[in-house]
Every structure is written in structure tokens, then in C-alpha cells.
Amino acid sequence: MPRTFYPPPATVNRLVLLGASNLTVSLRQIIQCLQHHCGGPSEILVAAGHGRSYGQDSQFLGRELPGIIASELWTQLDSCKTLPTYAFLTDIGNDILYGAAPAQILDWVGWCIEHLQQQSAQIIVTDLPLASIESLPAWRYKLFRNLFYPFCRLSLDEVRARARAVHRGLLTLAAHQPFMLQAQHPEWMGADAIHHAYWKRDAFYQQVFRHLRVSPGTAGLNGCKQAVSQRWLRRPKFAYKKVLGWEQRHPQPSGILLDGSVVSLY
Image 1 (cartoon, rainbow, N blue to C red):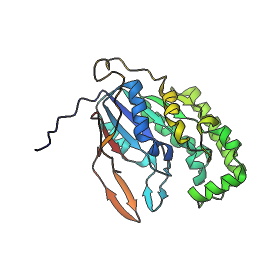
Image 2 (image 1 turned 45 degrees about the vertical axis):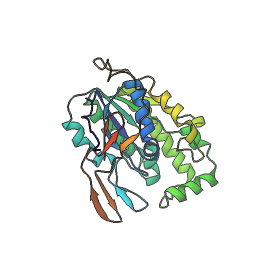
Image 3 (image 1 turned 90 degrees about the horizontal axis):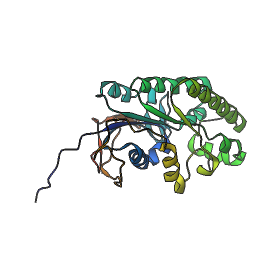
């Protein structure tokens, strides 16, 4: 018997998600937590990927992605219809281990925030897990640096100094721009000090998104807080990436969730 397909329900909001490994491994969970507070179905724009940089090309196991600010996400965002928009930026300290200077990292993050503000987005940015980085033993730092960032030669003291500078810069940005800066306390972090502990992710993201204000006009059946347990009907594929030097492209949106939310991955 042929399968019956129904048209997707109308989207009530837009989610813009930017980050690297923490966003990648918890993407579906983050979407579900956001929709619990903001409602759905959603139009979801994502720039993520293991080892992703905000401002430069990055590689991970033979896969290369452009910097987040150079991705096609921004062209798509500018062409979208007007919807209540909620944005989440994380994994900002990733670029320290690529050798980027704190001022450059802050410029990249500021650029993203400025463009999201043009969409009247409510924006949440995770701060660097500074306390975890300060308490990280040197031997463990070298182990994880050599595993995840084999070309990095920064000492732990240099990483700490740059992390402090980025932290101070984020505080300054938050004092002058309308976004929420979310602290990352040691109890949420794993052994490497930069990734969230697996068993604490759901509680962490629920805490992160609990202060979001639901925009007027999203009340009703579709706009109510989501109780559905999200799963992929079709997993998203990158709009553009290189694998061992070969370019691959996929039209967007490329992912669909159980509630009809569509996901574009850049």
C-alpha cells in the first residue's frame, strides 16, 4: 500500500544554531529543548560540524568546511520570510586552538550577532568554560590537544590567557548588545573541559533556554510548548563541504524532523 504524505504544518518560528562539536553531537536535543520553550514547528538554519571555526576553513578527519561567517546560511537568512527568530551561538573558544587571536574571534562573533540582530532575533551565546580551562591539568590538555587539534602548538598557559581575553571581550559585547551570555560552570563539562558531559546535556540546555521570551502571535496549537520527542525523518546534509579535496553540495533544506520542522545545514 503506498505511503501517504501530508503537507508539513506551517512553521511558527525560526531557529538559528551556530557552533562546532557541542552543537553537532546534541543538535536534535538542542532543537527539542528550544522548541519546548519557544514552540514549533520551526524553520531551522544550522552552521555546525566537528572542529568548526567561526571565521576560517577547518578540517576534521578529511572533511573541510568553510568558516561560519562565510557559509551560505547568511544568504538564506536574509532571504527568509519574517518569523520570530531565536539564535544560539556556542563553541566560541574552538578558534583559540586554531591560533586565532582573541580580537579576531570577537570580531567574528560580533559579526554574527550584528546580522542576527537585523532579524530581531533573541540571541543566547555560551561563554567560554573558563573555570574548567583554568583547572585543566597540563597532561590532560596535551592529550586532548594532540587528539583534536594536532597542528596546535599553544601551551596551556597561552590558551588560558587567550580564553580570558575572549571572556572579557564577550562580557564587553554583552554589556552593549542585546544578547544573553550564558556561563558554563565546571559541573556541566567533561574531562576535556570544552565538551559538555554526556549525561548532563539535557539539563544544561534546558537551563540555557529557560529565559527565552515567546514572541506574541505564536500562541495556539502550533505555537504551544512542544511535548513531542523529536526524531529525524530525514537527516540533514551539508550544503557544501569538501571530503578529501572533493566538493560535495546538497540543496537545502535537507533535513526533516518528526513535527515537520525543516533543517538547513551549512
